Length: 262
Image 1 (cartoon, rainbow, N blue to C red):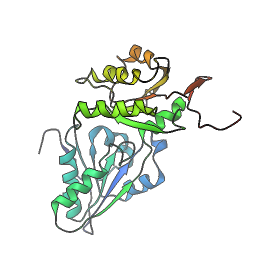
Image 2: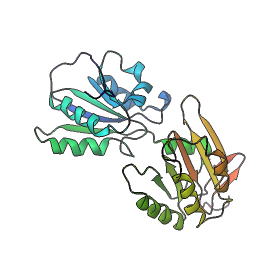
Image 3: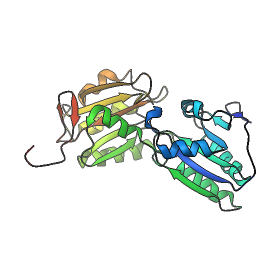
Image 4: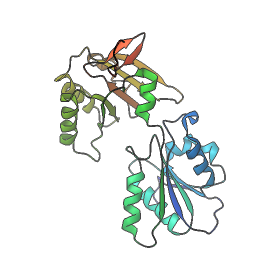
């Protein structure tokens, strides 16, 4: 077992195995859906990234738990498939929504690759971090938008640049996931430069860190003003850059839908 993996034993009965890939929302348990809560309660085994499992630790006492660190996603999901194939009811935990930069697709791919009996797999949707962040900032996603992750761990930076260029040139509101990490510090400034080629630096922009969690902070600024927050931005941050119609009113970021008489 890898040193970054941790197993907590619990009570597991024999039965028909299944996997539920559960989106637990942005972090605050008040934003966990009733369906997600019920699924976690009925699961025998919980599998997930250590930080995310810690967010729900009070809900899963007594269950068998398998956790590991960042970059061990394939190993975690393969272990979930193994547990389910042995007859366990497994919940794979994803932050936000399990189908948005989450574990849903990987679980399905690995289950297919493993062969053997066809596993019952369900995806339990959750509140995505960018949706929670938008609500904190106001209503910046009232019109068309695009979400782009700046992490080049699984996607070449050239492809990320292409997507940023396409979204910026089409005047989408842009949500930036994974804007900066301790090892990846240059991408955010490069992304801002790309977007600035298609909209003025005065364009409203918002930054939310730790959305719905302890230590939540939100800053309403502009595309050009994001630079002053670079030191505070990390993997727990979401950045939303407005389009040509986005405005700020009474401390809120709003992208008008286009209703007449407003």
